[in-house]
Length: 154
Image (cartoon, rainbow, N blue to C red; front, side, top):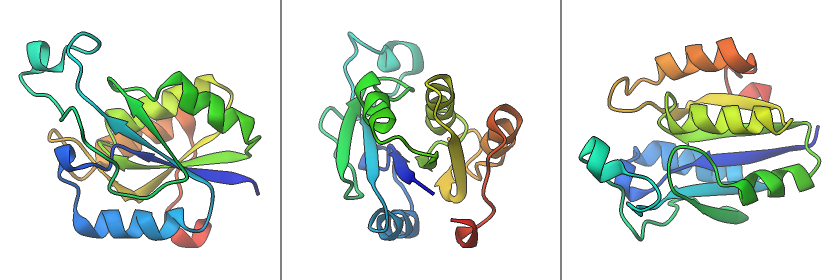
């Protein structure tokens, strides 16, 4: 099966658990991988004005990936989607930070692009609304269906 790993916003601004970073990094060594990094630019996405919070302007991915794409907002940038499409994959494995927001937004973009997003819930954490990520997993199952239950399914 042709698959790649999409790592969503594993960066200092979101204070990821160290174990999550280590486990994602180990998986990224086993297949093609890309990462997104959320950077703040108020002219593009009004995080500070609307939410009173903003990610750093210079955060880097805490996980080494084959390619890193900077994004502004919840969704992956178009160049990341285009890159994944160019790989002609059977599925895109998705993990990272904020299962119920940025990870879910990635799922919608991947799905809309004709890719097959597959969630790795043991490699995600939710937003401050639901740090467990359970809400995001339920939404993912409802919208995309493909949720693996553990690493043995990779």
